[in-house]
Length: 430
Image (cartoon, rainbow, N blue to C red):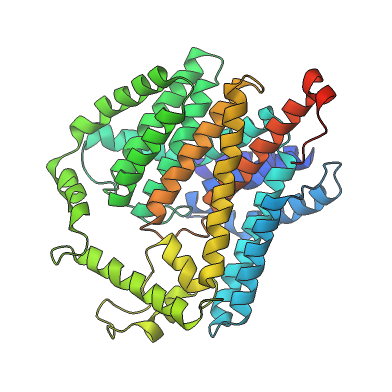
């Protein structure tokens, strides 16, 4: 009953602010999407019956259309639109189109919200507020779980699903993508108690990621940590932050965890059936691409089409998952889909790199550069885990793509607003 009351209060607050301006609608939508209140009060159908995601999304689109904010059109937006068109065409021509259509329509909603993040997140304060909502909506419960298991059963696996992220591998991916954003919020906080709260969130979410025993997550943690440190403006401070976190978490990890991690080098060997299965699933994806290199088998259609391309005749099961973002794209959307996706990710890194360089030259506030470093590190975590996880349509990743574009737009407008720059240059297209 207390949970239902708490969720009801959140919905009322979100509704009130959403009616004030479209940007608050973005925050309400993201908070609902990452928190999933209908799953938090599973004993009651009251929240689920509201269809909050649909209502908030519809109102957000309509209010944005009639708002004074200018629509954004540039090469990054064009690439995303081409990816959506490729998805629609692939699904229309698929042998499993009836199965694929609901997924591609849901993805279209994800892309639309991503675009509205770019349009409505127009300054650093709004950008930081979007990050804060994502971190609190997704990270609070997971950090609580992390600390609970760290204190009560240190080293033991925490293996359960999460509606927004999926299985253990998805949770590891999501938590590791979240960590740099938590660090960014801590770095840009204006009081010690806020920094302490974000430090607690960081440690809890980090332990939550490792306690999934995900091998891909372990590799992503290394990649994310190195990127965050190498790109950071305050390398010593970040190094101390990371080392202290490791000193809390690593000593409690048992031999079972390290035995699991050591099997990474066994990929392709008989003793690791999981690895053999993944290698087979990747081969099946390449067979799908060979059969239709331009369109693949349809958006999110790998599982449905798997049996038709399975040369093992069910040795690894039926209607299996591809277990890879990149090979999943090749199999489902063909090689054009993969090229578009990689290019979109590349543009996100380019956008962050541009902002980081501007900040390093003191041409824009250092906080924008710190945000760019955080997003780069998050995307590295996504890319590494994506090698072992079919997350090509992951809502969180696409929101981060939108945030990178929004951050670049904010930085360019900051730069253009400076009197010296404005006098010497024509406006820069965003």
